[in-house]
Image (cartoon, rainbow, N blue to C red; front, side, top):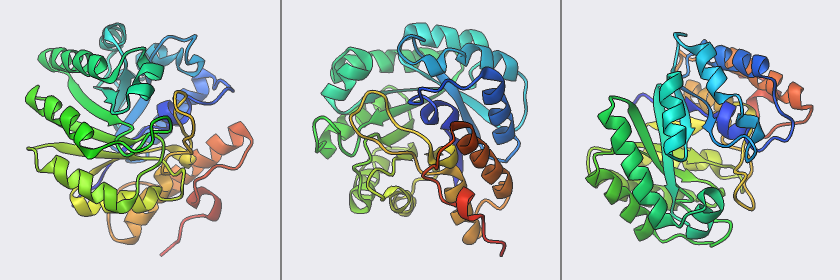
Amino acid sequence: MTIVIHEVGPRDGLQVERQVVPTDIKEGWIRALMGSGVDIVQVGSFVHPEKVPQMADTDELFRRLAGAKGALLSGLVLNEKGLERGGACGVGMFCMGVSASDTHSRKNTGMGSLEAQARIIAMGRSALAAGRKVQVSVQSAFGCGFEGRIPDERVLEIVRAYVDAGLLNISLADTAGHAHPEQVKRLFGQILALGPIQATGHFHDTYGLGMANVYAAMEAGVKVFETSFAGLGGCPFTKVAAGNVATEDLVHGLNRVGERRDIDVPRLVEIAKDVAGFFGREMTGRVHRTGPLGY
């Protein structure tokens, strides 16, 4: 089973950082990631710069990276304006989603979950009709920092609506880091039984279960994972969320069992070290601190 790596550090990793990263440095990190062998790199999100200043240069980054080889470039959009901006600057895959938590949805988008769901489905269908790649997601799929437990059936309702709309590239995001392996296997098992879905797992390490949840998702049949350099990341619209599963940690672990030897782990380690050095603090990722095993 070949595992696909979707690097989301330049977006999910950086969006909560108050120290704005200069565009030239972001571009350097993204080009290095594209040269490392990861499959997809999320360049940024098309949001209002006053809400998330770190993402103010997303359009410019896509323009600079136009025609670059090595990975599919994705971008997160929240509304029709973002879809328009992304289309104008060459987004390779649009990522968009709705929260299973009504409270989180209102804080993130200003809309309740059901209203946001209808909007995202319309946007996704529009992008598909225009010949674009689209990934839709369910945020707070495993629990919410505001509402606590999220019923499986609420997540399944959203996924069924996606499937009915022909949106089959679907990510389940553990936005607050509440997931546990048994829950992950159960929910992904139910999702994958609904149809020919390309499922993606997105896990945060808030309670130390991020990597365990990745392997539980693999056991359920998930082949695509969203990870972040150095384990950086979190959601600006939820109360608590530690960093993402670190890209270099997951790829190193895959290497240990003979998977994804085509991805350059030492290069990922250097990128993670550069990110940690820029912010001047220790990150949650491990392999960039310990060094990869050489056998």
